[in-house]
Length: 389
Image (cartoon, rainbow, N blue to C red; front, side):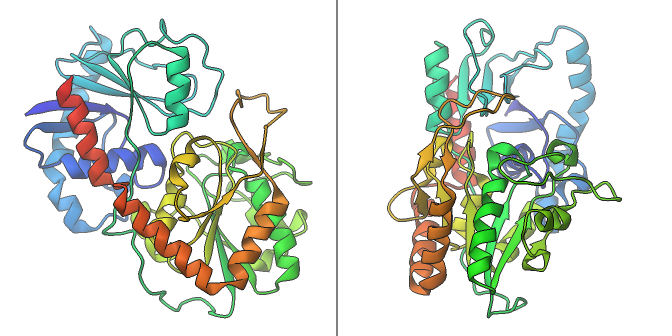
């Protein structure tokens, strides 16, 4: 049984952590691989996961946590592991610790297109791994290393179509928007479109899951809006004040706090549609994919990594994409600016046609399964890659 270090955490509240947690769950009893995480795994970080799954992977968690002492010694010494390593690389493709394994794979998840020449920076890697054709093309353009794609997934035992619970007023139209508030996610576009749509339809409700573990990242965000997002007296994002200052009735917004991934399906299935006008996605937008899996029709920006999620009528695509200008924090080559009028028109289509909502939702859920966009498939593909090195 070969140990493999996935050098990032397992967590149930954000993207990288959800990848780590699902790989840990799927490899917990694998006969060929022994998963190790780059940070300790605690019950607090996997809150919301059902107890049976925790019991099933408890030994794997214990082994991984016991490895942390060895990892600290390795980091302080030779920085070489006696087994394979998958290093998590974000924007800048920067390696914080310089670890190497017997084979070293870089999992490259990035939106910043100012990557420069990568051959020297990534010289220690045997293989580069990413989760979208967009990221793969950027890597191949700037680096001679081999590049492979393994798409992120969903857990179909959790995220699948099912009846609504009936806890919400059935006479209203619920629009879901998720992800931490930042420029690339396009939350300003969501609010501009919802402001216009809700003026036309008094029954419209925006349901937001916009809080994160890092509220400071979102403070001051404005985009195309008139008012900036600030913190409240408790140090949390003041979403209701923000929407009110931007001309939206705050009673038409349901604000949800940080929600464990395993609890998201029951929330998503109450929605009438989901809206994701991201300016850039390194992967394929996990929350949008999870909404699709639950049979919810999704409005998607046809740009960057999201293009790998749009096919065969499985979503409403926002095709009016203009270049993103004037954002100085990172490179935006290939990003897309969705048109607010097209977003409103897409919302109108779904609002006026329940049959269309059902058709798109069903098509999206079936497409994900047919195209193996599951965590089980992700784990199998990554395992095959690692064993082939």
